[in-house]
Length: 187
Image (cartoon, rainbow, N blue to C red; front, side, top):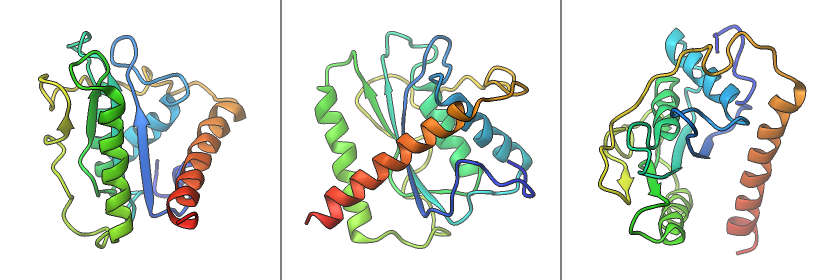
């Protein structure tokens, strides 16, 4: 993301809620790599392309993969902040192989994000609601361990089809629209 070429995934929204996992060697899911690449590039160039936005990240993973557990969610949270977005709710790390019921864990995230949005978020220039190193974790693994990825590992340099760009964006916008409708219009 360069200042002269804004992120293709960031329409002028105020809030982004990310739910992702990691695969293989801490890699992003196939339909998420291009978004993570954009975040990484925006973080590296220092242009703060997401200034004025606020975010929350739900990480799905299994601590069986201890070396790369929660890698993509952690990178996403770190890069979102480096791109200028304010963390309005602590990253939430779910361990699908852990002792905590995954649905209970996801509900804690959903209810916390919903409560934060309903109460009204402070200005996006306020201090983050939580530090990156202090997520809400349902596991006993380290919470600040990440494995950095290069642009080529995230698909940099490869051209993308429109489907690879538009499908994840459409899914994200549909999820946000559904959330807003169910939690704010239906009330």
